Image: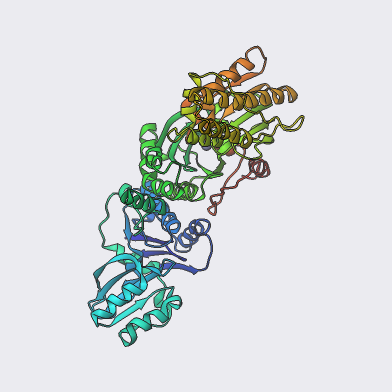
Length: 232
Length: 350
Ligand SMILES: [Zn+2]
């Protein structure tokens, strides 16, 4: 099975192609540039370099958020339309799960997060089973990181933290978690599209039409509107 | 085997309609699907960009599937994929652009970026062949422009609004009259039952200028309503609407007529959402009744945003050799003259 994996949900842009479970090509950048301009050229380049034609792809796996609303939609619009045109399945995988999966070697809790401004993060909690698999232990949420860390500290168990936005939050993590926190070094904090492809390989898909972003957050106008309704 | 017919599949997501269409030879609609979001935006009193983008990504493949099913064609028949590149809401445009790129890439078809206003103008080609030179009056929520076309794919802006677009003025006046969103059609309806008794200003601007200005008129209407309210005077809403509309229509019609004479155009075409306005349609029809200049106004269904118009404009761009690369981006501020020049530059470089 040939899989095309696409992740434009956050600043890291990733495209990967796997063939029968083997990574044959992966393209990752971590620069502040426009995903809309760069995604399709990246796909084209990778397809050419791996001698893959669009009709050779059997499945598309896409990171469906949380993250930048626009970024998530660029990935989804591309994956859904390409999958629909090629009449192949499209699987959406949580962007947080991709990151958590990279910590699957651990038997500790794993906390992936993305900065969501004003002290907020998108995050969730997983636990490694020691066999390279992770199990969700707390539902993904959009939350004040300080509150989240407090509740994790109360659990009194070790947690591995994974994030591209680590430097903005390292102090806070140490403040609440102290020695319970593990912050690994290096590229493990970068969500890899090959990880995304591997997760999606055995995942069964729903209808392409009903695949929607995992925003974890209402549009601001909608949130305000709901607030207004309550105060009425 | 020679292929005689050209089929363009187009995608349009510049504002709050998710649309796709297939047009044959730039003139004949094969299928035309529009998923409107108006109901979702009503409670906010206007289009919320983030909500529009969310709907587009939910609707896009459904709309595409409906379009191809209605057409009873296969992708082998499609010559190229066209998409609205701009102007419009950036987040909304992005969905269409990325979907169109994915579609073109998957099916290995040429990709064409289309200017939204060029689309509105070319909606008229779905009804009647263009004869040049022609003048187009573009009136919508975001645009009020007079565009001169000397040939296919060439656009010269000879007049444009210096402040509010005509449609914008309609929406603001409608809000003051407490009419539901979108306000334009409501004012048009009210105006039909009223009399233009109030003499609202007409912004002619300096001599010979084809530019427009509607902010003064808008303020005059709002002031009139406020003053009346303070004096407990009752103004008939129908008359206010009729008087406001009379001012807008007078300026639009007069300037269009003058420009048509000066540039000796063979056709005058009306484009954009406000082209659906009955008052404007009637006034223009009267003004051009005894003239050699032919007046074209698209049917109501083609005045509002749709993808058939993008396919029609895309068809010409395709013939002229324009091709977009995989790096095509949404371009919310795309300039129509620049767009025309770009197409000329790519001519012959297929
Ligand atoms: Zn429009």
